[in-house]
Image (cartoon, rainbow, N blue to C red; front, side, top):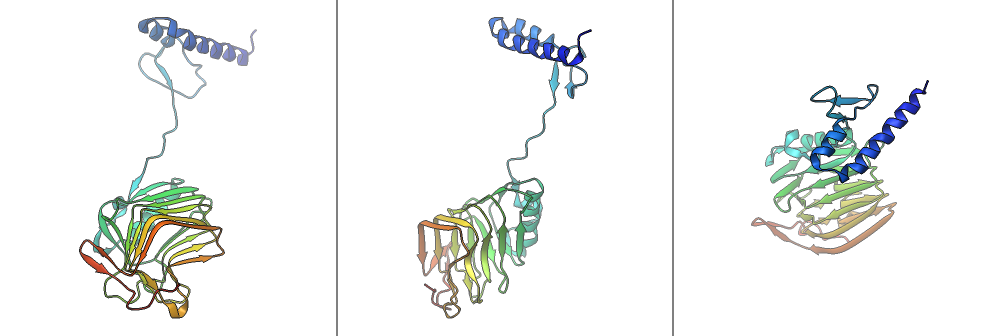
Length: 267
């Protein structure tokens, strides 16, 4: 009696022969040949059509290409606190093991701190906006507004971070990147954000390799009396800054942004 494993091996070889030789036959003949083969019942297959043919093997579903911030409750009216929605969206990325967060058109007021440590949860995420129409208003005067940590790859793209006009202290740190093997901030603009807090910054690079490219810091500043810079590096792995403007003011959608009158930028 032929062992069961040998029978299955013969069936698999036969199937391969069908696939490679099917190209020698007309389409109708190929369909007939392939349809005539039936997978062994013990394989996890999903059957359709006649029970004797048209057998397909089930495959795992691929994750969605991206999730949308508005699907997690974000309003984007520059008044509603969208911090909890951003937190929920980042939690969802961690749950699914990474992916892309889409930030659509809107002015999203981040009035409460948002923090996500992805250690043992995800290795790569992308946060992508649509340019100046995707605005995150930084408004946590005594706390870090957004902290992202423990990723192999982090990409923040096409976003605009803004302070609140006529407010003398927007945040402790607007964006903190911690313990990331590689992080890229590209095509992002920062308008009128100020940190007057000791230990603060606009972008804080901790134990990470960060690249900032094709971006701008306009009207942003820190407390020079407390040695607060626009970009801070602490126990950093690497930093590159390319094609980035640092200006004392900026105009966005007709709104003038400059916090340098409150404190000269630390250099």
